[in-house]
Image 1 (cartoon, protein in one colour):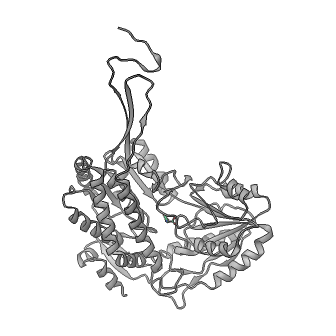
Image 2 (cartoon, protein in one colour):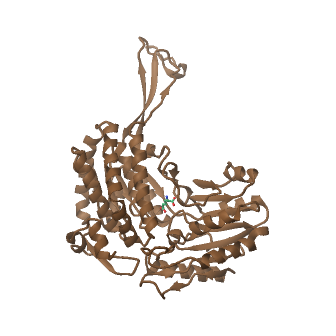
Image 3 (cartoon, protein in one colour):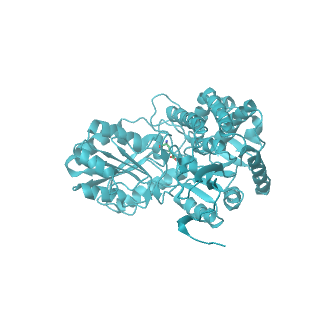
Amino acid sequence: MTHTATLAAAGLTQADLTQGTLIVRSPIDGAELARVHETPASEMPGIIARAKSAFTQWRTVPAPRRGELVRLLGEELRAAKAELGALVTQEVGKITSEGLGEVQEMIDICDFAVGLSRQLYGLTIASERPGHRMAETWHPIGPVGVISAFNFPVAVWSWNTALALVCGNPVIWKPSEKTPLTAIATMRIMDRALARFGDAPDGLCQLVIGGPDIGAALVDSPDVPVLSATGSTRMGGIVGPKVAARWGRPILELGGNNAMIVAPSADLDMAVRAIVFGAVGTAGQRCTSLRRLIVHRSIRDDLVARLTKAYASLSIGDPRAEGTLIGPLVDRAARDRMLAQLDRARAEGGTVHGGQPVTDGVPAGAYVTPALVEMPAQTATVREETFAPILYVLTYDAFDDAIALQNDVPQGLSSCIFTLNLREAETFLSAAGSDCGIANVNIGPSGAEIGGAFGGEKETGGGRESGSDAWKGYMRRQTSTVNYSASLPLAQGVRFDL
Ligand code: UN1
């Protein structure tokens, strides 16, 4: 499909594409797709006020009815899956199957949130006083700001929005400046769900497009009690303290430096497949991408040989083409950062395989061959996250050293081990094992399902989104004690007789 046809199929109009100043290019070939209107910073107070007023209505709508809106969103997403997936491919450069997979992730979280809308359970707690009942209730909290990154331009919005809506909160979304088109198309889909729903308040789901000043309005506003931000550790380091300083609640999902330990007993055929998808899938631009391989010395040469062979067979090129496994990096700056990091790794004693720009037989985007880098140690470069298909290979002898290496980075998002040894697997998952938010056995670090809580520790920011009880981050908790007796005993046996 041509760019024009993809944009039209996703419901983008000439007005969407031509009436602004924000230039959007496709990573596929660098072609200009649109000039999108940016939200003036002066409009932000009005937008936040609309969300605040929507909140006063939405919070009193019964949660299962709120779930109905999310059910309709899931239906509309199912109907638009092909078109939105193709737009993700066009605007981010993901291969077709991953573009569709991203939309599937949106559908999945909608299904999850619909069920959740009837399960926002609180507790009943035993009171120490006779004739008293204690309970915990979860209430809506207020407008949720969502700042999302280019690499999952729509799924991350859906994780936050599906939960926020059933929890009774409006959402204001600021997508990456690199991906406003998928955001506009997603809002059209949301608008269809809202129209079918009928009586949702105005301002329930809003989109703002622009740079840091637009984001700052959300970050700084006390009327946005929850601010969910996905992106770099640098960005989170600015956003998190600002939100905390005004007593808001940040949900941060920042950098990862995800490792796989490959033990001597590992099923190497499975490990190779997991490694290649983890390291080069999405051209290494997932926050969960595999970046470090910690291999037992006894199998290292065999594994590196298998990986070199597998890497040589990967088809790199137009992500829309059947059979392509590696599309472009998001832009030339990303490619330049990758090449600069490889130079640093070489200077630190690394041996680099691959990691070259590709220009022949591909469109005019920033295409690269993925890099395998054999490192003598976990150097400064290895400890940094580079959003590109670079996989550093490290060696271990003792299992404890492998876990220590895995944990000895500033980030703590995802991790995994390939082993058939129960002791190793369970140790890896134990309190003395991986320090990451995600720890897998015989599965790569990326491609998590929505049912689990998603996020990580240390510089990853500590936030949790998506499944499990991540919904609690979008609500306020109220503890209530009701006295149905005819006396007024004090807790802890305190006497205060008048
Ligand atoms: C991200 O890269 O920000 O686990 C999210 C995964 C995807 C989500 C990645 N489900 O790889």
